[in-house]
Image 1 (cartoon, one colour):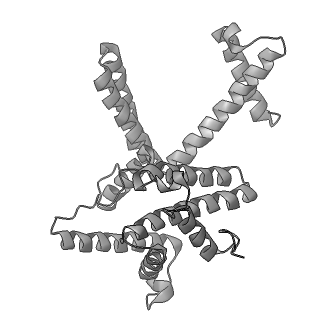
Image 2 (spheres, helix red, strand yellow):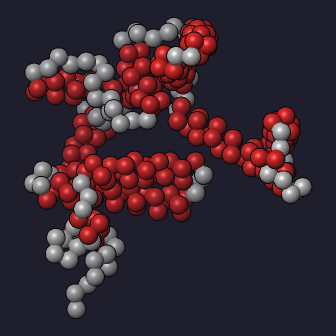
Image 3 (tube, helix red, strand yellow):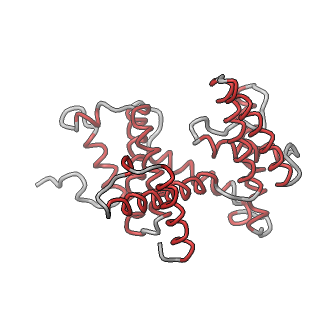
Length: 275
């Protein structure tokens, strides 16, 4: 009797399962209909779900979400194998080679490093790799090359500004960045008053870019900061909903001032450790 795909619960079993799903004769119609572009949004979503499990300190969920993310890697590798581009072994071999190359203090003769020294060395090695690739394509390398366009905007802003900061193109201190933030907010306010939505959008982008620079300067993850702010908003708004529901009411039936009062109440409860 033939074992069903997935009965081998190992990496080999996962690769076999993916091959079965993509079998043109008896595979899954939905899986067969996918390509790199259609699967990419799911890959991004799974990465965010991994981050969410970490934020929630939920190890069981984290194990499951890491499995889902691994499935995405296997899915892409299988589609590439079908096109004769590369396979999963090439993916694994490539990342092993890259990690060995970027850790010469572990796998080579380089001296031991502190975490800070390794971060700087890592970026230098990456820069050398980018320069080598640029040489292969005969194009002039830029220090900003290789920052993926598909990253979340705030994350990409941090990476771009970090690259520029390595060559001295950065505000001297966080106070200077905050001064720039106030300047950009004034410019945003001016454009909002004109009613020019396009220019206001550009100024809002400048405000967010400066905020990303504050995160870079203070070694903060802006996406994590925003996720926490989102979670805080949900907690406090839920408090408003629950408080109103006690009297059989909904937010639609409350005034803004009443909801503001309940919001402040939620903040006070959180500060006291009760909420």
